[in-house]
Amino acid sequence: MQKSKFKMKTVRLVGNELKIQDFNFNNMCCNSKGALIKVIGCGLCGSDISKIKNVSQASNSFLGHEVVGEIVELNSDINNFKVGDIVVAAHHVPCFKCIYCKHKNYSMCEEFKKSNIIPGGFSEFVYLTANHLKNTVFIKPQNLSVIEASFMEPLACCIRAIKRARLLKNDKTLVVGLGSIGYLMSQALVSYDMSVIGVDLICERVDNLKKININGLVFENNDITSNKIRQLTDGYGVDCVFMTSGARSAIDFALKSVRNGGKIVVFSSINDKDLGYANNEIYYRELEIMGSYSPSPNDLKESLRLLEQKNVVIDFPVEEYKLFDINKAVSDTINNKIMKAFIKI
Ligand SMILES: [Zn+2]
Ligand SMILES: [Zn+2]
Image 1 (cartoon, rainbow, N blue to C red):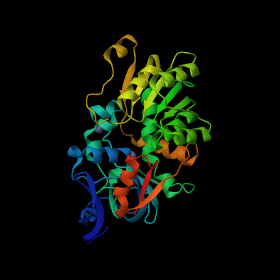
Image 2: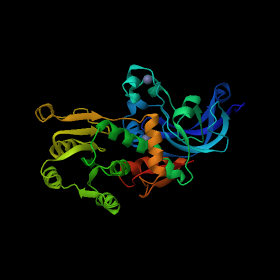
Image 3: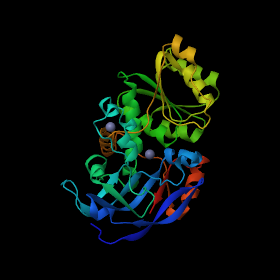
Image 4: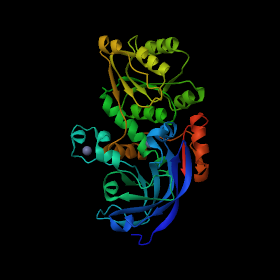
């Protein structure tokens, strides 16, 4: 491993702005098992954006976890990897032993929350521990571009949400919000034999979905659009709603569109803390409301398989930005100018 200390550029959240800073790579790489990765690029995730908006929780942190890069140094007992391999990596590794892990709540595991790519994906180099190599790092499949492979982690989040919902084959599902996550979620649901309706305010996003033969509706208002959904579901409403975007109106819309006894999967954060689901609707209609946050190593593996087999395709525009343009990538994402930003290092 790297014997010398070296300096490189990374991105740190300072206030609500991302700043490019020098980072000293100490001897952490040579002291413990792991791999040094020269980063090729890293996707900008909705969760990075939430942290930027909600600075109090994440100030001074390093962001970026949808990493693709080349192994430049390796100190590992695992034979899967060699120097020169292009790999795709995610950030959190569960312990597989605690009360959370035993109940498959991997993303609640203390180890999971503590573990991270060092320093963060928006860096010239990152360090991945032996635990990462064992669980969250995979060789980039030949038939995937670097950008396609970088969707392993976001798609794995969708896969986890679908698993959490415990659906039956051919269940009718509604995806609220058709940004990159909603688009991936819709395709993943189809690949698991679910019937899907996607809804968004933005026509182009609905058209994207229709282009791949998935039912899409432009949101008009709660009554009109939920009535259309009921017409498409024999009057019942959908079996499950996936909320990839959160707002008061989106929650009302989900409650109006889900059938009695159905499920709502909460899949995005909301800044307004007073928002909530109505107690009596949940009670009288026997609704199940559940959250789904971050994927397990198995979800990552499954995700890469769906991408490699082209069950899920990245055929929407992904905008590339240089590291020093990362704040523009953030504002373009927040302003819905783009569907997804990829930071090229
Ligand atoms: Zn992500
Ligand atoms: Zn655990």
